[in-house]
Structures are given as structure tokens and as C-alpha cells.
Length: 145
Image (cartoon, rainbow, N blue to C red; front, side, top):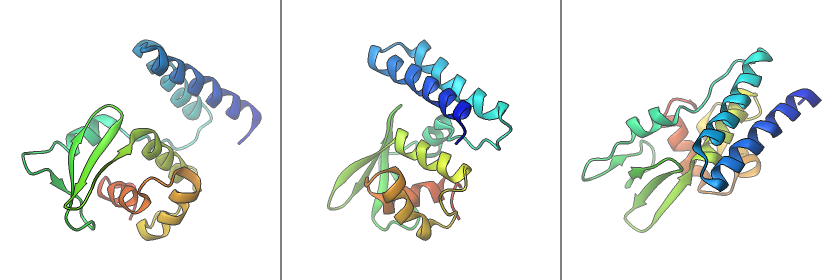
């Protein structure tokens, strides 16, 4: 990452974080927009995680939406920050921030496009937050093969 690119990203992230901490949605959106604008200006192909699309995709009914490739696991809800999942033995959630970071790494070519190959990279570069499940969700959303 070049110096200017890194600085733009840090500024956008700082505004977004400050907006999140203070509850200022306008500042949060401004920071996100600056990051995205900076990426587009640098001419990179931009493949953002459209959270509205995620919410639409996982609108759960009474039973929840099953996750392909993850037996007995379903999405039971989505809000602005998390995807909530449930298995017959456990309940957990995946954070929006980590899924967005994974999509950014995919965009940069730093994570493989194959879901099974992406698990280890997700764990190392993003988070140890249910990496197998996270990659199944990213595959279901069309970001991984």
C-alpha cells in the first residue's frame, strides 16, 4: 500500500470509527464514503460488501435461512453490524467489519477466491471468528467460488 493510499484509508477509517463511537451516523457515512472514493480515484477495481444486499439476502423467515455448505446452520437475523447464525448446538454471529475486511482482501488479491483455500487466510488476515462459517457466507453471497 502506497503512502497516500494508506493515509486516505486511515483518515476514512478514523472518521468512520469516530462516527461509530459518538453515534454520529453522518460522520460514519462520510468516513466510509471517503475510503471508497479514495479507492475509486486510485483506479482499483472496487468490490464493496453491499450490506443492504446482505440484509436482503438473509431476511429470515420463522425458520431462518440455511447457509449452503454448512449443515444445520442458518442465519436467524441481520442488523447493521452483525449476521446472527444458529446451529442446533450453538448460536453466534459474524461481524460486518470482518466480512468487509475479507472482501477488501479479496479485492486486493490477498485472499484466494476458493472458499476452502480462503479459510486459513481469513483466520490469519481477518479474524479467528468462525472462519469456516464466514467463508461459507462469503461464498453464498457470491464473493468466493
